[in-house]
Image 1 (cartoon, rainbow, N blue to C red):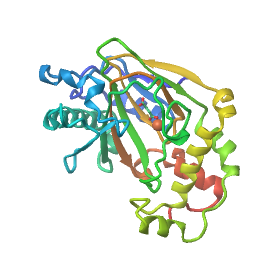
Image 2 (image 1 turned 90 degrees about the horizontal axis):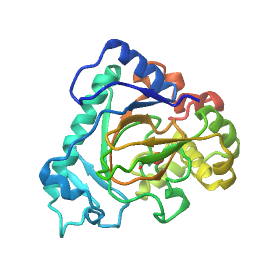
Image 3 (image 1 turned 30 degrees about the horizontal axis):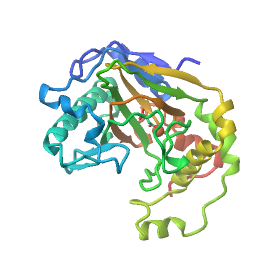
Length: 294
Ligand code: SIN
Ligand code: FE
């Protein structure tokens, strides 16, 4: 299976050709990873100290920044100037946004900006609080506290490791196969569940049937160790200086090892896709024979 579509982009701000744009959207929507091996993110001299695990307060696994309201979480405030980290992450957020506008111009109008994340902790050997949080197991992304009501999850990653260390990922089978395997094992949510979760503050937004199914698929994939071992899968190594764009709600993935990664999340309503029928929402709706976002 061909999973990477390589794009020769070396600069965050340069325009790209219409031919590359057409290839990019087609491949991305069909479950490929857009891979830019020569698109690196440079730190300023004064930012170099962020390349340390010491920057993390070790309560959260990642440092997260919301560029909309300037909120930064997960930083060891005693030893690090939050403004320096915010500036670095805001710069990455801006570049990632420009990149999506260049590569996928059809998405620009509808694109919604999510969190920026900086991942300074080595993944290999990291102990997760629960198997559900263990991203070394194959999964599609779905998050218990932030239902996204069918919107696509589009992420830009850049490996900024200064010691030549790759980010090693595994990718799994096509989304349709994941659905065929796990959807029959998922029942219906009990009536009123979504309203109660929202009222109790367990979810930030309304948890639709789509969110319920996606989170169950995510959890069941991670719980099934036999599946983890036997599912069709391959490995990819992303070297420092590589950037890649993935729809992580669609592409089954796991991060096995690596340290120092930047990531920007975007959300996209399925109607903004060239082929909405390729989205997890429409694939699940076709399988269930009903709307899942009412
Ligand atoms: C994930 O999205 O599961 C983790 C990706 C990474 O941190 O490399
Ligand atoms: Fe993930």
